[in-house]
Length: 114
Image 1 (cartoon, rainbow, N blue to C red):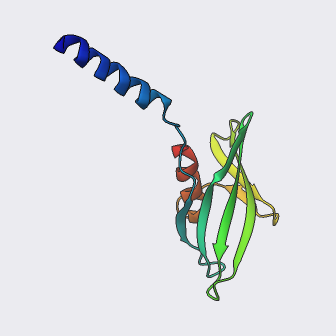
Image 2: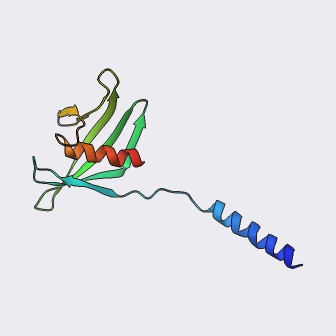
Image 3: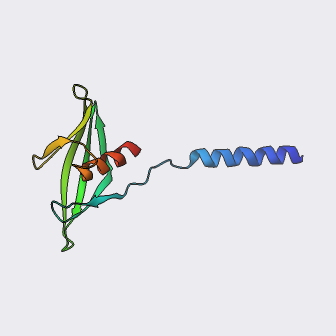
């Protein structure tokens, strides 16, 4: 009798665990302070979208006044040069580099987690 009760409890627990929604929590992930603009920058994780070999994401920038601006980015792998490249809605583009493009570098680290 105890065995049946224990098995029923385990089965019920497994069903409840599997029935729980498996949603990744979306949030704004801090990626640094932009020396170029003077703004704090965050990746909006819920905007990360992959299409073929390209990843799209939105960067939220908070100005010292508290106002927010948003900038769309595109990241892709350039196999001819063995580098990751990016471009944004403002026309800025380049190679992702930890030292030369630190915000884009940090953005890529977040993207790789999702």
